[in-house]
Image (cartoon, rainbow, N blue to C red; front, side):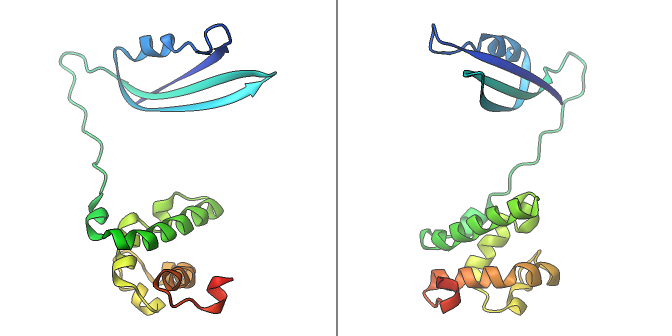
Length: 162
């Protein structure tokens, strides 16, 4: 995998960024991802574009192994009614991972969050029964998770509502 960075200056004449260098560049590339960042320097807007790519496979080169497919099996576990609690847990996880400086899946995966929603554990002991949640995670995050579950089910404690 290779990386290419472009910085584009805003053109006040045309009212946009000229992305033709990017389009020309990706014509013969297998693009993996494109991330863009907008910033202003000396009152001039700039757009920085970072492209992760593979050059197209040449004749005789071995085929690349495709990236692992995303595991979206958790979506099938949840009903529309479950999404409120799932989203509360996901929002909590997002804040927690920023605080801890780790990716969200390190805290809990979407599948683990869906299991919490379906099983509605009432104690840290029940939380440990969910696949991938060990004693350490349950002790570290358990009280937060259990408080969030109570908020959604209407059995809120006084501390959870404040």
